[in-house]
Length: 116
Image 1 (cartoon, rainbow, N blue to C red):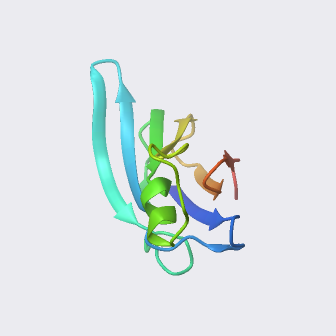
Image 2: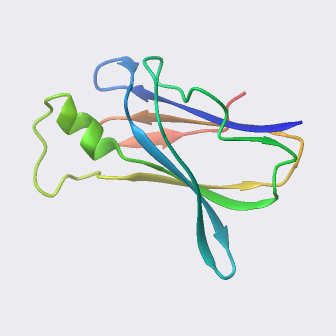
């Protein structure tokens, strides 16, 4: 059974990023299709996987609303913020695979990798 999950680490403070809004979007030939909108919990994770079961193969985006998160933590951001939404576009090629997409974020940078 496949699974898609994520978590966010606020590397500006060295803590999990709680309360971050995340949108999951399927990128299709006919255009985008919004699949799910969630928020991270106190551990910087979603309460449940974003997708489970036989994962539809294709290209997806996770959109992490980190500008709002850092503003809510009192970080002094310029207007407009350098990073408002961190977008990670990735592919699912194995319907039974476990895809974990972590985000490491500051107000000025972000990185990701395929986790386990």
